[in-house]
Length: 487
Image (cartoon, rainbow, N blue to C red; front, side):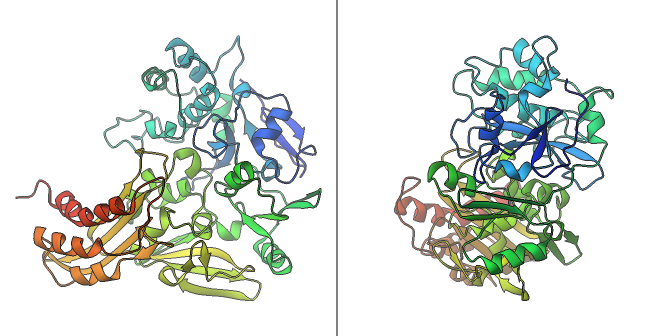
């Protein structure tokens, strides 16, 4: 194993497998994957170039997702993130985990259980497995996304972003199950006890393009005020796809993902305030059990590889009509805090979207935080209709929040995605529910109203008729799920 871990302290270098490597050869829009391969580290591969196959996965040292002190090895898609976003950071590729004569335990298990055939996807699987192998607390608590798991078992959802086309998943999962817990003397464990590398201010220009990591939120807001064409970037899980597949080259990228002011989290009895720069994995772990609808959302949101990088601010900032967070947040009456160099303002999410990928946010503004009222106990659900169970784009997404008192619906929030040019709130259906008993008849009659909400269209994911049918059956399905097993 590679040891020791050398933290890069110069803005134009990164620590890779314990060596400090210069980032000078990378252009502002070059991905971490392309830069790593230019350094001769060809284990990570480009498969889909959009963060869906995991062949490009690498490990990075990050703050612990649960908010505790120390570091955590996190697996990310290297094909999406700009290389300069990792200035001063620590990266481990499959080459840094072990050697042909001294395999890492994860690599040894993959070899012993026949988890690799053509080998193209294997390095990505190994890095995702290694991140789970070193996940803090894995040896003491059940895996978060596996309710039936025993203490110490692996969370198979850790591999939800990795695809294999020839081996089949059984031997890969067997290899994952065969790996025990790391030894206390493991250098990767020892590194986890130390603080994560700090974010370093970066300003790189080449060929008329520029990448800036500001030192503070004020600097970021000043840049946006001075450069209306600047594009904010956090996890790059959307921007990276545009760069790779649409050859988008914004003249100025402003990195926001490591700004401390955007990474705060406030937990109160009546409200959660989530910093827009927190990753979805961090939000998932730090708010678990507080808002049931969010607990149901996260396992269906893309994959662990994506959630390790993507931010709530970024997902809402794209204003996609099929972004998974918007329906849930609409159902929860979320409010956005928008910041600019002139101050902050609050906008209800219901008033945020104005058209297809258009919002009320001005070019000089950023989403700084999301305020979410803690809902009363009741019924919550997130129905995502897609062609795959995990790591896929929604055809239709329906988020429910029903407040019940003595079996009567006293309040309702229903958010919809994929059925209009923007995510929408199903106001007519909510009105059809409130004041009525939560029973099969109410669900069926309100379901008929829900089928008329939005303006669904036909595309490669689903037909308009299918989308309307999904809406019509969503409330009866919810009633069945919420009353199943009751007398």
